[in-house]
Length: 167
Image (tube, rainbow, N blue to C red):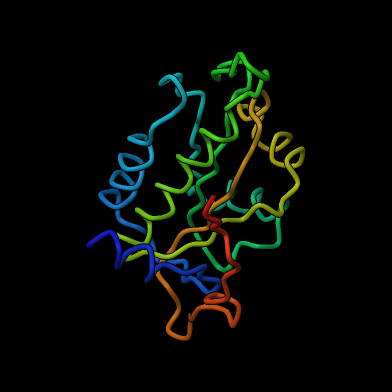
């Protein structure tokens, strides 16, 4: 899909089916996400693909925002593996994870699936359920699936604030 069409067409889909997602599409999403740039190419980011029924139930324990999905991807970053800007000690772990997550989100839409960026979740509940996430700052959960027939953007989707100033 042409990039401009992709970014304007994508929306936060809150009604998904739990139909199985093809392995080729999962692989494509991962390839796109892992091609994202990170500060000084340190790549402190990790993506967990959650697709078995038991594990998906554990995701639902951490957030009510699962939207009917049968597949989830969780994005996190290790602060001690990230570049730190010397001038002010700003750690870029969350920035790097956000760049990876954005590419992941766009790839989901590009291959005909839908999702939304879920930031409202209980990180400790996820870490208790998935101990392999313990050393990471968890940034986002993406419920992933095919859109339900009645899925549509929210009323607020096209509302935009002015974000640009000329100096």
